[in-house]
Image (cartoon, rainbow, N blue to C red):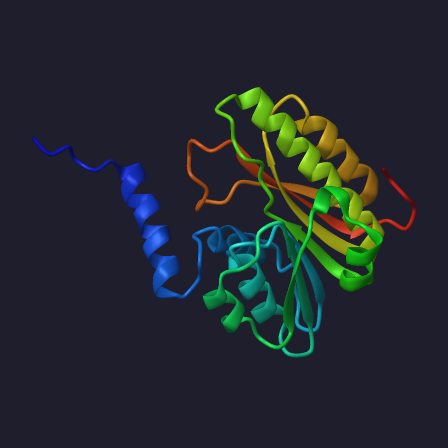
Length: 209
């Protein structure tokens, strides 16, 4: 006897199929699209840094938003596939490196003076919600430290975090460093997922972590 597909499965299939049809490597692109549609964070001519950019959906979409006058750099432990690398427009580039230990060489390559830093990084999950949330928090701290270093004053920050004990700590750090903050759960996120996005608007000049 065949089991009837749940609404959840149909929704997941919808975004996966849509991503394939629109030539994006992952359904995660629709999370950034929802954020962009609501808050208009990335503008034409912006310099954008994409942390944890593989498999490349956010990188491609951000490059399109920034346009020919903008620039998008991506960093990830995993390189992009050859297919996606060949699709990168002239205003986008990707570097293989560890965001948790960005060395001087990588820092020189990615440069500074970015208008927006985006991070869709997630840890390798263990099945333990508390462990996964703690690992997510460490990645978020690394992303925030990078944003502090490379963002221009007034710049914006988008970061995915798994909700857990450290969620409020991270939110408070973002509140300290940015003039305004928003918490956003995209419709395209899986309902069972603990992921949520924290957005910082207007980076302050003074160090905050």
